[in-house]
Amino acid sequence: MRSTSLASSAAPSAVERSPSVLGGAMIIGGTIVGAGMFSLPVVMSGLWFYGSVAVLVFAWFCTLHSGLMILEANLNYHEGASFSTITRDLLGRTWNRVNGLSIVFVLYTLTYAYISASGSVIHHTAHAMGLELSPRIGGLGFTLLVAFIVWLSTSAVSRMTTLVFGAKILAFFLTFGGLLSHVQPASLLNQSSGDSAYWPYLLVTLPFCLTSFGFHGNVPSLMKHYGKDPRRIRTCLLGGTLIALGLYLVWMLCSMGNIPREAFKDIAQRGGNIDVLISALGSRLDSANVDLLLTFFSNFAVACSFLGVTLGLFDYLADVLGFDDHPMGRLRTAAVTFLPPMLGGFLWPEGFIHAIGFAGLAATLWAVVTPALLARASRKRYGSPRYRVWGGMPMIVLVLFFGGLCAVSHLLFMLDALPVWR
Image 1 (tube, rainbow, N blue to C red):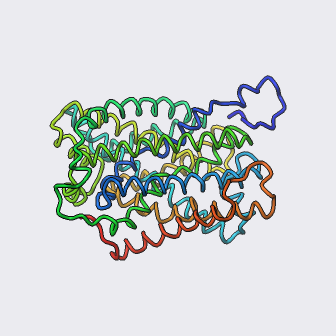
Image 2: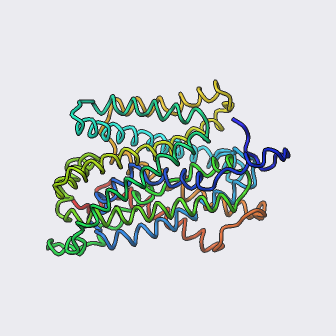
Image 3: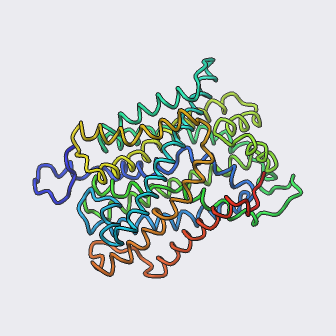
């Protein structure tokens, strides 16, 4: 793949070194807004609508700034340098090993989650068309297609993500235009339920919110794509995360405005996978058109997030394993990237919700804690001459606090020490 380095001196290739900011924002937005969004109404049903809005905005703010902290530190290193390179240099080999394990665990877990989700969605889509296709076979076929696109190049992922994300936004507004017209204020205010306790369910939502704003593995990929241009990369991160936040808020309004709080208990008990939530919305509205649009939207959502997450994992593994960027090197990287989660998806096709939750625990380390520590160490060593995240030390402390709170919440959840709306 041709280098996009801004340090290259050939003037005629300036256009090639200046790819569209829209494409980068679409990679970020497409990575974030994927299958994980379908877990949000289920896990946040205890907190309900207004509490969910507050927590989502807080999670967006913290994860955006942790992503910008990765950018700040990464700008001091060569284009293509990943977490492994900058973490080893700034925080030491021991922290790098622990951080590397968490990165691989999260990205592999999310890849597995999206294989599981894609199988579920394709099975539901095929069933709506009168066809029978098992989730295992659907997930396997879809994964092979994504692997081929990622193998081609970052530019191929950017173009495909832009196309699919555009289609997803169109499907989103077509779908939720219908859902918005059916929103019941009484449902949003939870007037039909006698249980008005919401905040006890706050902590259990945090790891899922963190995972639902997971784009951090793509920051080094963007620097590889745009070169050392912090202004444009910052615009990509801000634009992509704001798009995601807006879509999430509309999604929460539509789902919680159409499905009563009590009904989410049954959805959670049935596993909370995408097809269960789609069926619940379709049955509430009794509309074949809405059910069809939701099915199309879920396909686009899975595709976007699948592409973005696996691109981040692909570039990380290529850097760690030292595979080159030629076709055979990329083929080896693709094999290491996709074969393990494909095997997991084939053996355990129904693990979507559980995988998203476990990813949130490990993501706390590399997507929140490590970026804050990298920014602090980078400022001490280099002074951050190219770019510095605003807020100084208080911002670093806030990001670390958010990460610690997410980690403690998930550990308490695993110990059954947190109330869950079921």
